[in-house]
Length: 467
Image 1 (cartoon, helix red, strand yellow):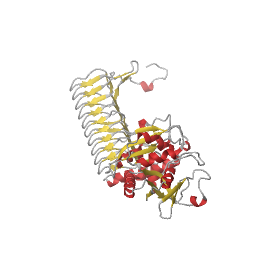
Image 2 (spheres, rainbow, N blue to C red; image 1 turned 90 degrees about the vertical axis):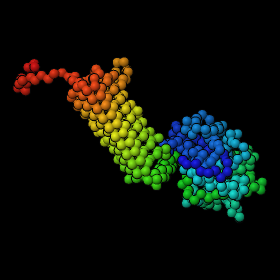
Image 3 (cartoon, rainbow, N blue to C red; image 1 turned 135 degrees about the horizontal axis):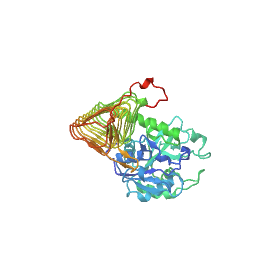
Image 4 (cartoon, rainbow, N blue to C red; image 1 turned 90 degrees about the horizontal axis):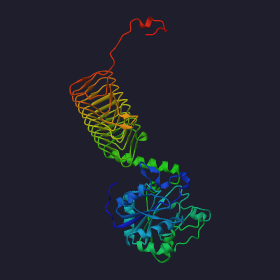
């Protein structure tokens, strides 16, 4: 996510202490994944990109969110579930000085750096003690309603979580509180401790700070967000799916605008941290996950999954599964190949049909065309492994894995088994059906199989006759 020039220094608070009971999950709501990134990390990264000097995430007791947060993110604990006001109150001690404070929600992940920057800019221009982000919804059910005065300023926000919180007229309003605010730092620190719990839920509502500030003659600004999707909250897994669809569309559109061809966006999943070079083609039913990097002019898919892998310029991956692999420029994989962690394919190397590679380095222009397993091996350039070449890398008795070393310009014939540890020198050959248990010198031919013996008339013998 690119950084934006900061309008003015500010701090950010991300509320993430909600219980999320409607998710029906043992996992805290804000830790559910959204396009390869925990939900709570999205607003944190957006705030940073907008120029936040510090970001504080408020968690509930016993919920350790540290692993899900970008490095350098501060945390605070909300000791009891006493509402949004209680969450921000818990963060006050972690904030920097008197800088404006932007309040975000860990379950509102689609807010962008641009939207946060626009809010801070509007707050600065207005000179208000607080500026709230609002939006207009066709169906505002469940959202706090924004009540304006005769001059169009924000008079108050009415919560609607329980019967009795709002009147019928207030429920008819369509302008809603997005839960995103920008406060004057000193004003927030002064007013927040005075927010009470006299409401149907018995909670501290953060918008009550606006009521206190207005009663003291301070102005309250409102910044309308035109795109309601930016402030779409997640309450359950249905909501998470809706947010994921929007986030995924944005990710794919950003790649397409940068010069990537996505043949069928509807069947393609690309995580937020994935990078793809220009003129690469992503075929249908392809999933690019985690920290995957794809170079320029590559072709990936169809029906391909790539996780935490690197695909070099001009490489091709067809009907394959890659996890923790690295393909150099011009390499090709598939169809129906599996590259496991630690697999490296050098320039123009090929791993073909029904080939599995694990923790191995396949040299430049080397080919493993089909029906082979290469595990814990180092293979030099310009080598060809025949069909059904197997590296027997694991000793089940000692439980030790050993490496196989195969030199340059080596040719193994079909059905060759290399029992590690073993070395095949440069330009070595193996005969078909050979089981190699000793090193093969350079330019030598290894033949390790029983001599053929033909039994004449075998088909005509009585079934009970011994051979």
